[in-house]
Amino acid sequence: MTKDVLLRVKGLQYELLEQGQGDVETITPAEYYQLDGVHYIQYDEVASDSPLPIKNLLKIGADYLELSKKGAVNVDMIFEEKKKSLSSYSTPFGEVTIGVDTGAVRTTEDEKQILVEVDYRLDVNYVHMADCKISAQVTSRATGLSLTE
Image (cartoon, rainbow, N blue to C red; front, side, top):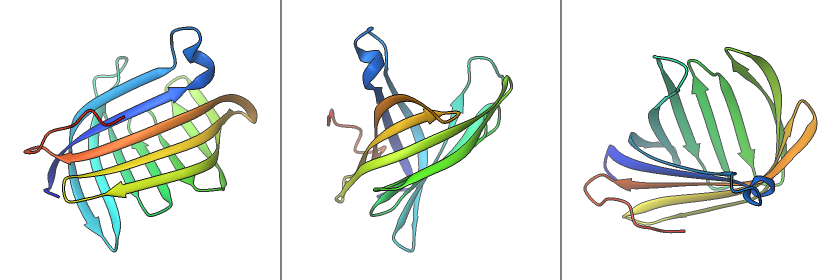
């Protein structure tokens, strides 16, 4: 895998799909490196209500995905198979507690791409909000992204 990659992040909230909402997809350039068997992907996100980018770091291990956001919003979310984690989600409008109860974490990789898929339950301030799925696909910019579902 090269340093310069494309990242495709897709998120689903099943309860909102019935209302025609609940699915989000982003494709963005990113930087990739690997250290001690863990994949690191850094990328910037532009928030509609802030001129400053949000710095994101994805860490992908064999049975976990970790997402850290720093900037207009701040959060460290850990998706570790069969575990629940709590984190503080800070925004310009206030702070909430996010609970992530992770089910399955599936990671596949080959010379062309890394794909991680996570099923989880999302709680906000200790109240169940949605059953969700997130997938992150990383490919070399030279290779481009396929339409893997």
